[in-house]
Length: 213
Image (tube, rainbow, N blue to C red; front, side, top):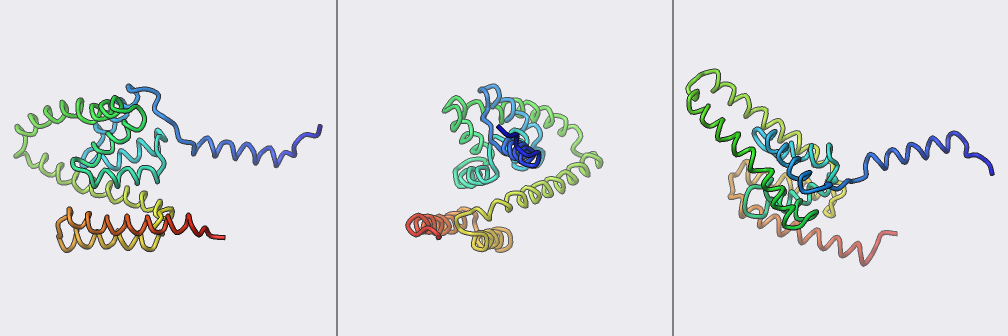
């Protein structure tokens, strides 16, 4: 029996390391779900979405970028806060209704106590110029975090069934209607969402019936 060449062994090791680095993991227990979602909520100043992407996709590797975007899209069309909906869907996917409760409790229990304490402090210091300036600065930082997360999520559009050009077009149209024209978000989401779902379904069916050679 002959030994493998050093270059082949090195390539195999590199492939195994790459697979291990990209392989998705599962939460080990309900306590694990509660801990991570509590940590997410405690870091979510100005919005939890950027933190949720970092924790679930980059740090814990419980979700792929594409999977995160799909669950987030579903969360946005459901009633209620987006990230809470995301927590419910994620928890239910892994542990059923108990996982949904654990994720929701993580999002709300400890952060609610922190918010109550901060509200009492803010009530006493609301007129202090330093506090007012700090809150305005945090708003700018929160906007930057959301933009950064949008850039990360945009990298997954190349795998979208709509294709990159059409997906970017739908996103730009949504931004123009809601951000610039101030159209009601409910009607924009229902209208463009229905068109996007129909177009994606048509492309998926077409690819299944007539696969590319």
